[in-house]
Image 1 (cartoon, rainbow, N blue to C red):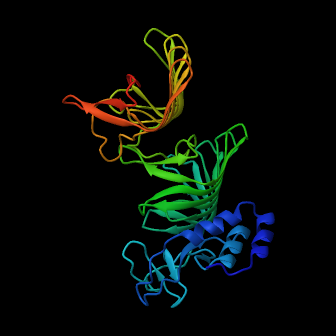
Image 2: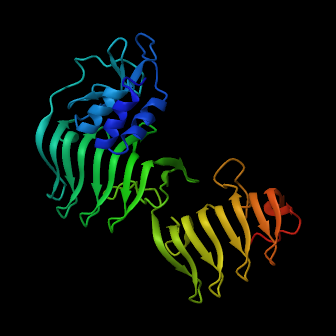
Image 3: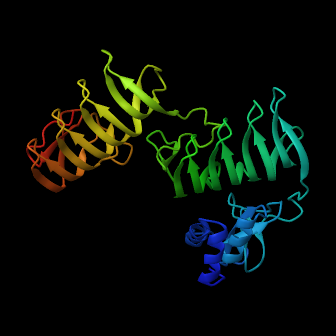
Length: 360
């Protein structure tokens, strides 16, 4: 629940651009009820008293701030107890060690990895918690801000060149995956590429990916899931040397010489004419345009997602809704498309509009 008048939030916005959307983000969150008293008046716990987080906790009851120790994932405003996301049980105060240490942590190879507040989690293991800075192995600053469970929770991430990459807050998905939740994303040349709430979705292999902004790349430049295919940006060519595709793509796990369009990009005919452009997924376009070999626009709209329900069939993605033009440029149809799957493998064919033609 919002605790302050709109004019106060406007004042905060002038000091911390984007804070209005952050407050709205927490206000819209559906939080678990307290396991002790049953109250639904609960809040997300965040660690680190910086100006922005202090303002947020003063604006909404759904954001609870602690200085440097995190006693649970959620806080009950009614009975003033902390509880965990894992078992929804209250965490007894005598189980959680509030003592933090300040110092440096190192990579196995000896280079400085972190400097700041940290917690000892085992006889030989430590975890950053509270204000701190992480470093790449070459000594360049990688992240700085407020650290918590699984990594940076509020702060900045930098490219190895020193250019700011992301500034904002992070969230946890599936209890173990940390992703940017809200903030600003910059290209390596310093250009502001995106500002707002990030959107995360699972791909066809079950890996969580950032789909908004679509060109963000790996979640973190310093650590990547070992099994997740890496999204790259570049050019792919036909065997005869002509440009086939430019944009985001991934490499097949079983063969480093096989690549799939994945994300925003453009596909070309062998003569260099644009064939398809938009957002690509498993099997082809998810949203975008198809062109005739002459260069005339053929279709613009949305396609099915083969990674979703009913996606197990052979062949490309197919149009489900959009506009269809004839090769002379006249609009022939606008609306929903009807598709049947042919043969034993279910290769799709557009049956309405009747003259749409091949999906190859």
